[in-house]
Image 1 (cartoon, rainbow, N blue to C red):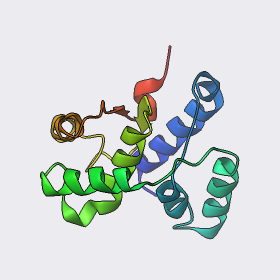
Image 2 (image 1 turned 45 degrees about the horizontal axis):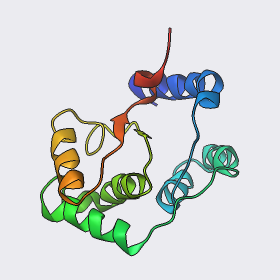
Image 3 (image 1 turned 90 degrees about the vertical axis):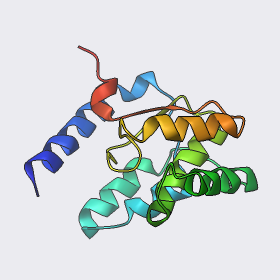
Length: 137
């Protein structure tokens, strides 16, 4: 495991232990599907962690927004799952989309385009950030 991955995991654990009570948390079927990937022991722990979180619905409106994010060039076609993460959070009125995906989601160069497409489709997008950005001193 790389140093940055370990640091991100530690920050996530710290956020979960100290900041989680300050927020209402939700997941989608896409989060659940990604949680089972990788090391089986780690996947089991992730699944236990999210087991009681409410799951947001994936509707036709979510699918339409995800397709728009791709067709408008905000998210590349090969990152379709990332478009769905963003769309399900946006359509369901989530305030913050917490992620370590700094390639296609929490990316300062991509964020403005994602936000523009969401607004063009009639939605106010959530604030996209990493757990580190939602820590308090």
